[in-house]
Length: 165
Length: 222
Image (cartoon, rainbow over the protein chains, first blue to last red):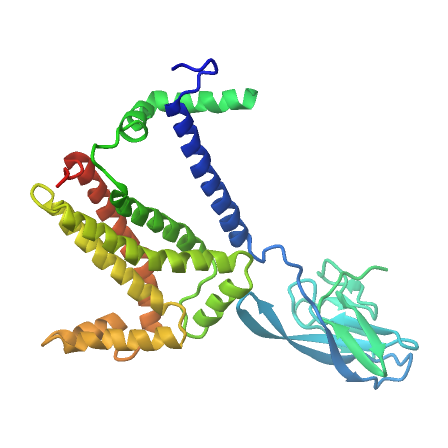
């Protein structure tokens, strides 16, 4: 009865049961694991939002506050969001869009046309026309939204990025 | 190879303290199948297997489901159509639940035909009947959770039957619905029953059910 390899009917059955049940557990674990991860690693989606026609003359120093209003889809939930952005047309089709959220604690900054600076009402944060910190507690420059002019209309992207330059 | 040895040593270390290896081998893995059994004796085991599938898929679906009237339908829709593997996970839950009703009755018919409910196994029959009622409760509460038209109206009709019970019916109905009408309170209630209360009770009864069959053995042939 004894096979030289030590295999017998009982051991074969045992191995078979372990293989079948092990495969079942492995396959369900992979499926359920992927299900649990779900959309965790999905890229955050952003979109271009039209903020109206270009009003400011080229090189005009004034910033204009516009509200980006859009829906954020989070899984099954859609939330309406509003963000204040200051835009200025610099030259030709170039547009600067600076986020109004102070980098210190998130208060809304306002543009002071006389002093040419952004002022935060909460803790005296001051930023220049590029969004760089002049004085006060803010740890970083105001963030920027990518912006462009297409067919005479200004488009602003919902995502922000750190100001470099 | 070294890693395998490390695993074996950890296993041996644990088993030296809990001493389960020999018991599991003798009582479960190497336990001889009683004489005179046939395939119809598998239905109970299949039902339990389906229970495990329902538990596994159910646990994971709670990651996405929300028991809120404004969001439940969207959440179930999201599970089914947008989450990777969602259709399979929910599908397995759905089909296991449906098949369970079939296997549970086949199991019951087998026990009835073999007279396995007779002394000394009456208590196991009684736990089995309670388990059947629990499975029906699982089905009733689970059917409501997708919060679609079918769920809403089936539960409206299903619960309203309670009101026909003399004297206490009206009050029982209001307790089950959490008020006069079906709504947000009903949904959370049913969710809580479906994922917390019913599973806990079911697991306790299953332990008793399995313990008794080991203790008393399978009923002999006709």
